[in-house]
Image (cartoon, rainbow, N blue to C red; front, side, top):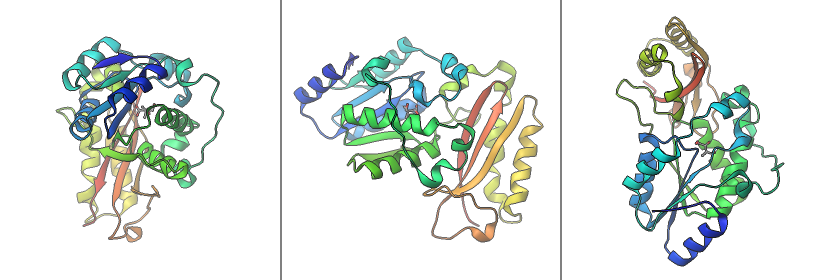
Length: 285
Ligand code: PAF
């Protein structure tokens, strides 16, 4: 694989290769198995794949989060070299390359900006839309791959693509989990040892939600989830919502759930100093 840092080099390489479809995996680095599964999927379907590594400042609503976000470029490149081919590119741009001028664009996502992550991280999805639209402009991919862990982000990106008339196909890849069930995330490496030991509580608890639907309604399920997680030292649930996978509208009772829709239980948890998110499909029983 080739490692480059400018838009000019990237576009010249893609022009020279003349391969299609172009696959694209945008990342913020600190790569783990979840990212590698996206890259492997892209490599399987596309003769040329671009992986970008760029910690996008505009999507951080918390300055400390941006400062502390893990940066591991050497190990990232080593991991990528194991799954990428000669024709593939790693794009490691600086801030000026992505934003020659400050990006003041404002995006709107209707209901998607009124629920869950959007409420708790104001401005976050606008920053994601800024960087993803800019990266799409630079790479001009045919297929782009995102992880389903960032469930709301995926819905936002699908909406962005629709709004901008971009023809890129968006693929959502299943969550990859640690052995104890913790969803893989670049932030997991920031968890304190004690907190990490108990982190399986999140997946264990949300996994019970589907079965609980048989005999309980949503408010009871929510309080079960909040109580089970909050009683673990250092853990506190920020929200748990059951939403449909298109508009992400939260449902407040079983009666509102429709047979022809898919539903997901989405959770955000403060785990010590680190904020984690996860989700699971909720089957109607
Ligand atoms: O999911 C991420 O890592 C980021 O939000 C993304 C899509 C790479 C944009 O910076």
